[in-house]
Image (cartoon, rainbow over all chains, first blue to last red; front, side):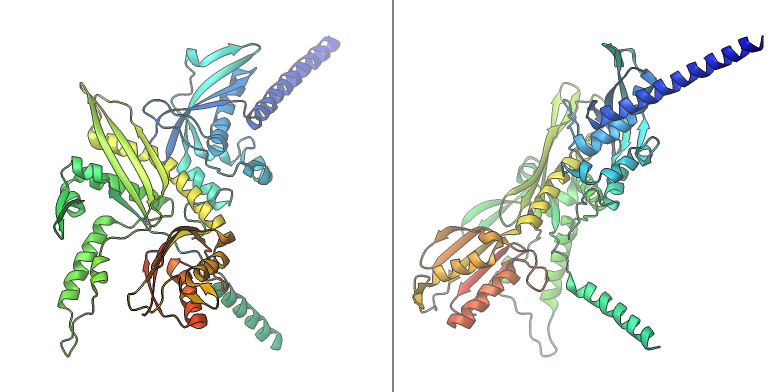
Length: 173
Length: 317
């Protein structure tokens, strides 16, 4: 009897370990995707003053990871990539005009984009967090999930200016 | 005790040198102004008779007094720019200040009854000024019950006449939204792209110097002209040599040159002089004026237009 309990416990522990490892791996993979620009970002509407409303498409084998990564990708996209518009709504340029700033300030961005890092202060999920059926796609072995998020770009810009990462409009004068 | 005094002295010295050793570049003034197209479409043009030739000029005062949409758009742009740490000069207030100043000047006399000195040039220069004009235009498009706004923002350098920033587009047609809401949306959606281009323009200014225009003219009382030789060199060449030596990487273009006038455009002047003081077109051209006086005993009169245009009239003060 004792041996059976031991074996079961060991099996559960191993399964739990695998699950955590798989989840962590998926998270690391999602972070790598963010760094290699493997996400898509598009404007969906004019937000309130000082905010951008964007839809971010993220990839992962686990839908939950893709959902979580959407916020990080949205901020990453607004800082480094900018996004295209659609008829009636102009796209926006990236906040960082220096294309090398990500490498030059690698330490800052490592902390900024860490899990639950400071980037979280500037991004909100729009709606109740549910994903529309047409925004959840299975592409090959992974999911491509589209989430609409709102980014407080005025506060984000101010933060990056205060940290000396990007230049303000009046800097130098 | 001695050490304490030394420390205090060093701290005071470092604060003092920090204050005087570095000065910031002169900040350009920006002002939002409705475009001539908008003023014409909305009936805010006034007739102006310039010695028999009739012109139409925008009547900004009337526009601000009568059009609340204009006030909303200007106020929104001013608000968003102030948030970015770059407050704008307000056209309506500038016009009021000019009016008040004119009334005050007309009444001002000394104890002996003397009036204020004012040359015809002074009178001509009494207009609202900015270094960069943000020219704004919007038109309302209507298709059946749907309304949309086409919005255009242009940042125009007042001296070089170049467009240094711009943003334009047509908003999403709406059945229900009220016009001021559509206008506000248009401003909000375009201002960031406009500012991104403005930042690029300022970056270029810091990297390559301020772009200015220099005009050289001669008074009829001047005994020579720009082709007269001084020490074996023509005066015009002496001026060009001075420009080559005193511009950023010798960058300037001689657009026009005759015996009586020269026009230099795309002149890149440094933002700071050798002492670290901020420079504008006038303080930079003062160097040329001084060189002509010290080396060749030629008097000249130096006039300015904002940060970016200087005019040197050779012959006398």
